[in-house]
Image (cartoon, rainbow over the protein chains, first blue to last red):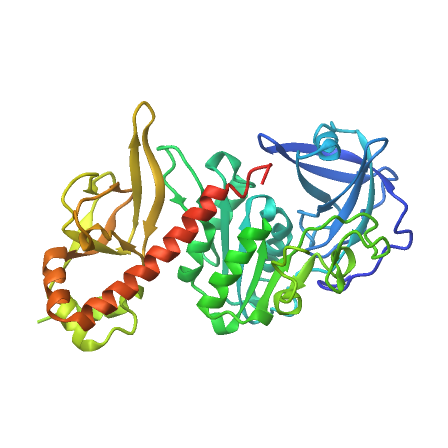
Length: 283
Length: 153
């Protein structure tokens, strides 16, 4: 599979049995799980931006973005926050515990189309997880891109995801990592404020920049305003949408968003193509 | 003699400002440096300056009894700090503390107010630019208030 091609798995409705290989705590309510097929085979390769349906037997199924490295598909990585019964059960899985995995599904971030351009990635909260595969990919092909800037907004310093990895990326000379939090104690020496305020200062050429945005929808709306004000073209802005995805293959219609199904046409969507529906309350 | 005009012109706050206005503004400006931990101003003090941050980071803080200072936001390179000098009673509403070595352009507010009063075109330009900064800060603060990244959001 190349960086942007996607195909629906041959048995898309049949969960494959996986086991937890490793579980690590990111924040008080967020965990990263490394999974491997029970059969011992390699996981199905994925591209940055895709998601899997994770199934806890007897409880339910949820769509979760893949947060691992697409250039190392032998390890399937998901970062999950406890928000409901299924995600609580997933986060409680110990090493060796089983779960079902369907996927990968969905359209990816345009990392191949962005070759030769600057990239600005704007993440809010857990929205960093679906963008992490993009960063892995970009850094594995660093010479093909211009400036790479990650703007990340978290609620508090304690809720920053992948903290050690962010520090490593920040130490690199070939990318910019700017982190800001909404609120902090006196000991925090970093930035405080909305992530949208960082956009205007990002060292990219707006006329030759691809923007990838992932976070709560309100945050994405304001981020897009900031990107447009900075001169980034609407057709160069991509967002990862979140809707009630259930079948993951465009059959059930639960995730319909205007003329698109977020599960199969998304979750990554080009902003100018969803503009008429983006921010509509009825959607 | 080297003037501050090229430095002012390079700062985003003064982007595309007419040269005649730049000359007027430069007459009220000086270079400054603030070390980590030092305060640029404190709540309740007379507000007679504003700052353009050239390098570094300043925390805008409010002291909360029994909790200590709480940072509302940080102001960083390319941004402007302080608008209380523009409006009566010309008092700061927050503390501003440098979090790291910070280089600034500091402007004499009384000098600028006098020039804006004498030249309303300059005053209008200033008001426009500060209003834009205020709108951006207000919107960003509203987003912070929404607590978008909480589990319930």
